[in-house]
Image (spheres, rainbow, N blue to C red):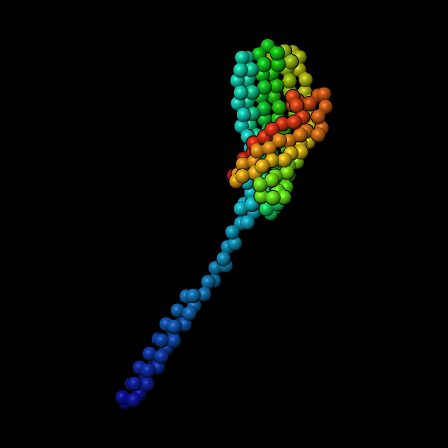
Length: 180
């Protein structure tokens, strides 16, 4: 009888040990798939510009947000929006708004080459009132180069589509660009 009792206890003990170790082994198994981090948002950078200028009867307010996607350490493409309000008292008032497509090429980490196609709608009231107005589209294609350090780039760009109706005073424009 003691032998039977010992066998029963041994079998029970063996079953308990087996269940315990098998549950420990299954506890290490991960049934939930590891969710991969969304790589798209890791390559997106936001930037743009804000401008505010006041003078003797002159007002200049501009907002130009943009977003780029870094395909790799050399190439990035993006889009931007732009709104600008300009007013010279008793002479003109204008609203400019539109968008742009932006491309960057970084042959070296410190050098950034850029191309930007910009399309703006221009609404101008020539005498500062609504009586004489002009409305037209302005297209610009800027080719630029700059020195890049961290999130900032300083450089210059040139509008290759400059003509007599261009809204910019000069085809050559310096810039400072930030992307975070």
